[in-house]
Image 1 (cartoon, rainbow, N blue to C red):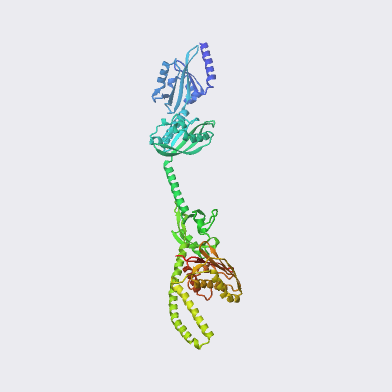
Image 2: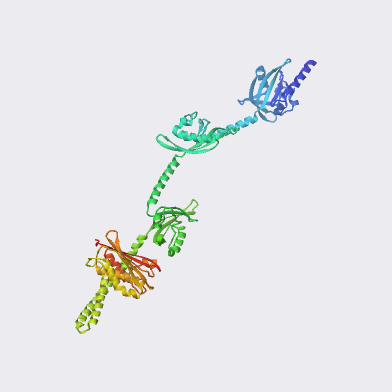
Length: 607
């Protein structure tokens, strides 16, 4: 009996030494169901002390169990089941529930026979899998949420291994297009999409395997329709940080791509229209006034070079219009507006601009841009000015016709009586009176040029050089009185078909005006020459006081003169004569430098 007790004690000591070193709970069970030994971990799992466990019958412990099928077992039923299979080693997963406290623990239980020389013992190994079960549940819930999410997405989520083989694919795109996952799974990118598309995809995938996320777009034709996609690829890293796969999100962007292509096409059509239109299309920032866009037409209107840019369509504004333009800019913020103003181009040339502008608001109804259309209306303004001058000229013509009629009748009577009295008068006196009357008749004839511009005249072939020589001879004495000299450069020019007296009168008016403008004396340069084919030019340049830009624009208007006491009829008559000869007369002048008058006359009378 002592031997048996000693051996049991020795066995217990050995079991204690070995089983305390095990991380799992260990229970040694005798054939009768008595617990011979329980290590510290086993007592901890059962939440009982070693004195409550050791020596107790297993089936008397305050627990029951449920198996994987949720079937409830008492410890006695479980023990009897064990007795039937005590010669076999087996493992089960159970939930152990305490009858007293309701505490439950998920355990993995393995039972194995342990035979020694004295009796058949069984070893029960308890492994707490509560944390593992909790982790599995969390993982299952996470997977369920993941699959629920990705399978409801319009985007397609897919995974690839390092050989670019599809290992997973999710999303509603497949259902929408009638494609099954098997079309992708287990196949490489090249097998699914073909070589042409796969080249770009594989290039992106190789960069992802280097740890770099990639974004790319591609298109494919399905059922005769071109579809557009974009994808974001990211690396899948293992615990060691090594890339072991690729996850991607692919999106069907066909609709937005078509809208983008349509917008580009629309923008291109607008750009072509804007770049080829004569009007200027522009847009600028409302706060900074920085020009965001302006069409190419501005180069012609502002006379700029290809590389030059203007700051705004309100650049180089005429000083007289700057206040109105500033008020207009403020008015744009309230409503669509329009203004006409002048600008200074190159060579100080004045142009008229008409600008229509309107505000552009953002989503917050705040003005952030101004857009508009500007057009060059210089020709329109010049035509309006010509029309205004023409109306004045008509009035002057009617007035001149009346004056000529009223003067000519009594003048004829006076001239007749003077001729009758000539015999009783000294020759000198009669000649002076008659010459002055002839002068009055010539003035009346000039008036009639205004009244009847298309009256019948007799045109002859004449040389303009002769007219100039005669005029200089006529005005030489007046020029000397004003300390003015003439310098001529008369070229050999073809004859012109003209009414000689009228052309001579024009030259006299021009040279006489030049003499009167040179208060301090100087030189008048007179040139003639051929111009293009079929034209002769006469150019008269003085060193007088010059004409301001404002006055230069109004030359030729009725009742407007550059002289203090002039009424402008001399120049107006000259312009009319040149017009009747189908010629042209232009003026260039700079203050305190002088004026150049250029007359162009055709060698043949044009129809």
